[in-house]
Length: 250
Image 1 (cartoon, rainbow, N blue to C red):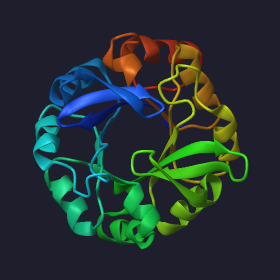
Image 2: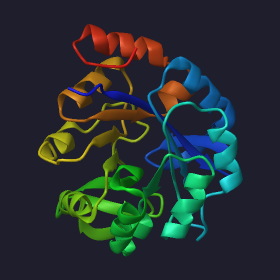
Image 3: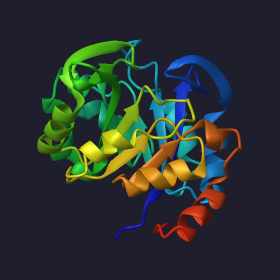
């Protein structure tokens, strides 16, 4: 079995890393490059950088921020936010990203996923999907930083993204985001047959939450506050997972 991955996430707004609860009440948690340097040294497997205001402000990700963070890294680096074309993605890759994340633009124009996979290989394409539990759809897809609901059922959209050429899914439970109540393992169970890697996001609060997500089918687990604030150092988490039979890179 491939080693499971531990991925810190930098949600960036106005050049600073921020975090809230259920995408609201954002607070400042530091400078992206400084946190990137720390995570590289601590043994994170990858780093995700999301320019969370890009889609709302109808712009691309600030390339200067990406270059500054990439300079600090020796691990794979995914960047998302405002990617609407192959040209946008190429600019981010040239700025130091290894993969590009797409969310709102892919939902509005699904062919973008295929265009990116054809241009750079599907291993470079990470489809980020923000979902919330919904009585009608099971889980509903939201766009523009979680501010705009769609008519899409999350499970249908994730399978479509696989068919379009996405190489990986970054799946965030908006209900669990920032709560510390644990990942939505029921949602992960619903996706156990999805053939591409799945990164679980939203809800990490304890070591056991990461273990549960990985046991319920996630290929990687992503968190922010626990790592940014030093509540759960990555080496300690990896040691815990290894002790519980999970293959991780130490």
